[in-house]
Every structure is written in structure tokens, then in C-alpha cells.
Amino acid sequence: MRAILTGGGTGGHIYPALAIARGLQNRFPNTEILYVGTNRGLEADIVPKAHFPFRAITVSGMERKISFTNFKVLWQAWQGYREAARIVKTFKPDVVIGTGGYVCGPVVMAAARRGIPTLIHEQNALPGITNRILSKFVDQVAVTFEDSLKYFPGKAKVTLTGLPVRPEIMQAKRTDALTSLNLSGEKLTLLVFGGSRGARKINQAMAEVIKKYGNHPKIQVLHATGQAGYQEFLHELTNNGIDLDKYVNIIIKPYLYNMHEALAAADLVISRAGAATLAELTVLGLPSVLIPYPYASENHQEYNARALADRGAAVLIKDAELTGSKLVGTIEGIINQPDRLQSMSRASQKLGRPEALNDIIRCVEKILPRQ
Ligand SMILES: CC(=O)N[C@H]1[C@@H](OP(=O)(O)OP(=O)(O)OC[C@H]2O[C@@H](n3ccc(=O)[nH]c3=O)[C@H](O)[C@@H]2O)O[C@H](CO)[C@@H](O)[C@@H]1O
Image (cartoon, rainbow, N blue to C red; front, side, top):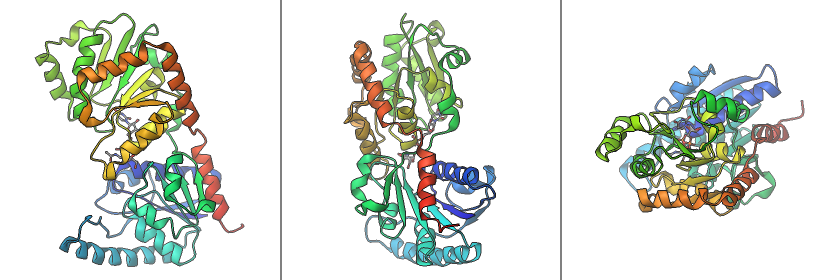
């Protein structure tokens, strides 16, 4: 079996593609993978490190208004299409799988035009433009959120699969995680982070939360500021008269490399609303306060957050409305009613899709020619 995976720009498109590549190799031993991306996207760095062969094509994103740059982009798209068509012709894949981002366009189109089975995976509740266009040409569309089904009208070929999460996230044990993170088993754990790069706005609001819960007998906080915001946040705390050395129940880190343990230890999560984060929260049935990143393309994080908030699994706070006191008030409103925490947790669990990877692989099987 030979498969081309394509998707790129940000980690949000690349990690699902890598998970699917590994899933295919487990299901079909001897699967040969080729990953097609661009040299400018993060995939050029991440994919070779994940030990998959990588080929780059020329392609870049359109501006959303008519401009000279767009003519250049169209010319590049045509070049990219020809490069993709050559790669598809020589690699002779049995299936081509796209996970979003501009680079998917020419690669998946080139395969579809040659009659090669194609599948795309959409991570967000509001689908990206490339996937919306490609959905008209591919054999299967796998989606993460029920809310995005309406953007893909060809029902027969659209399947709600969810987004694969890292295996260690489902395996981590709470008691081991608490010990490893130096947290207490007697306190309620608030886990706070702002997506993989952190979020300044969330950090700013957290100063008040830390002031409120510093040395609280029943509550502890694990907060990842993002690498870039760490020093600034520590200064902010000092300026607010907060001396972290005096608080035994507050842990501040630049980044959580052991997110599987942090999630296993958490009772309530405060974060942005990226698709991977939400897949992790729901697979574990974690309740959350979500503050969508407002500058994500077409504000898609708000749609992701609403998919949870509308079903009672999360409380949504708009970034523009976020203040320290609003965050404290929202947290208090949840943790002071034990029933609410539990009902949010049950609603979150209902949305979790621990079988996401297997379901995506089953979609691939459906379109493969009979062996
Ligand atoms: C800013 C932006 O446009 N982000 C988009 C990007 O997500 P992006 O990949 O930036 O963000 P996600 O929330 O999807 O994932 C963040 C990942 O980082 C991990 N993590 C985070 C902090 C930390 O300290 N340690 C750690 O391990 C989280 O567990 C999660 O697995 O692609 C996703 C899928 O298309 C979109 O839904 C997001 O909106």
C-alpha cells in the first residue's frame, strides 16, 4: 500500500496527518508513506523529524481581496499543481489524504483528476477554505465536529470521526500524574494554557486568578504561559505584588511538555479553543472555560468553542470580554456548584471520540480498491 499525506502550514494540520500515517502503517504493514508539503510550512521541519519521506511543492495562500499578489499566487498554484501532478504520477499512491492548509489543494486535486482515491480530514467546526473546495472532488470527508457537517452537503461521503489525540493522553493515570507534577490529590486542579504558544490575554487575566487562589486550601493551579510570555508574566505578578515563593499551590511553567499528565491531573481547564486541545479535553471528559483566539482564520476557534459550549461542556468567554475578574467569576460559578462541574464533565465526555483514528482508517478502507 502506498499513501500520500499532505497538509501544512501549522501543527494543527500536520499532527493529524502524522497520526493518520502511523494509523495506516499499523493497519497495513509495509505501507509506504510520502508526505507532500511546502518548504515554508512547519511540515518541512516536523515531518522529517517524524521519519517520513518529505517532498515540497510551490504554493502559497491567497489574499482575501483582489490584489497583484493574488495573480502571483495563482501562477504559483498552477506551478504547484504541475509539481504535485508529477509527484502523484511517479509515486503511484493507492490513496491521497489531505488534512487542510493550502498545500492540500493541488496535491489532492491532482490525485482526484487521475482517479486515485482521496480523503480529506477537517479539524475545525468551521471548515477551512481549501477543504471546502476539495470536498466537491474527493471520495471521503472525515470531520471532527458535528457542527461542520452542514458545510459539506454531499452526506454520503462525509463521516463524523473526530480528531486523533496522542495515545499517551488516553493512557495517563491521575494519581501518577499528580505525584509527577508535585500536585496534591486533595485539591481541585485548574489547568490553564493558551494553545501551543501561550496567550498573553489569558496570562494577563490569570494574575487575578492567582491572587484569588494563592494558598487556597482546596484549589491548586497549573499554568503554562507559553515560552515567549513566561518572563513577562512573572514580572506582571511581581508588579501585582504577588510573590510566587509564598504560594505552595500555584505552579507556573513556560510550556507543558508533559501535557498528558497535566490533563490527567486537571479538574477544570482554561484555554484557547484549537481543535487538538478540544479533542483532548472531550476524550477525557474535562469541563472547560474556553477563550477562543479571535485572530484564527475566519474566527474558527469561536465555532470550535461553541460546539462545546452549546452542549454544556464548556463556558465560552470572548477574548474581547476577558478580564481577570470575569475569569475569576466564571471559575467560581463552576467550581462552587459540584453538580455543574459533573454535568459539564458528562457533556464533554459525550463529545469525545476516542476511536477517531480507527474511524478515519475505516473511511480510507472504504475508498481503497478491493485488494
Ligand atoms: C492559532 C491557531 O490558528 N491555531 C489553530 C491550529 O492549532 P494549534 O496546533 O496551534 O493549537 P491546538 O489547540 O489545536 O493544539 C495545541 C496543542 O499543543 C499542546 N500543548 C499546548 C500547551 C502546552 O504547554 N503544552 C502542550 O502540549 C496541546 O495539548 C495541543 O495538543 O490548528 C488547529 C487545527 O486546524 C486549529 O483548530 C487552531 O485554531
